[in-house]
Amino acid sequence: MNLAYTPILMHINCHPDCTQAEIANALHLTPAALTLATKKMEKLDLLRKKTDEKNMRRKILVITENGIKYLEMGRKIFDEIDCIMFSGFSEEEITQLNDFLGRITLNLEKQDEISKLNSKKVPWDFQ
Image (tube, rainbow, N blue to C red):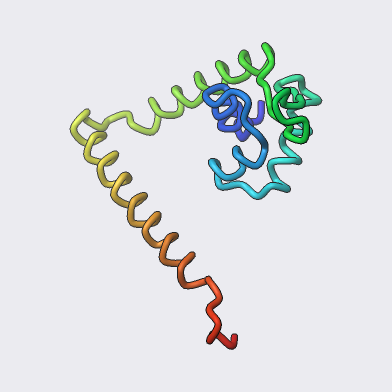
């Protein structure tokens, strides 16, 4: 079982009729990496690609029954990993860790926005 497929399947399951580009953006994957993964997942019958009936140029991803089973197994494995990781921690410590990680994530998102602003070319930028 490739656990790397689990977040992709979770996204498709939570966001029906999503495209590869939307998943790549949401999961911070390159389009090429996601294309490779989805091709393998299609061969494993975890998902299928279909044409959007409203926009024939748009390909959407649909989770299959096998994909749902795979997702359930992946969630169980992640739950077991969580139990192992957090054994010996109190609920208060876990809550505190979640708060810290949330703040770190917000800081990184702010930094990402600053990086985007800094990377924009302006007329007087001669680099």
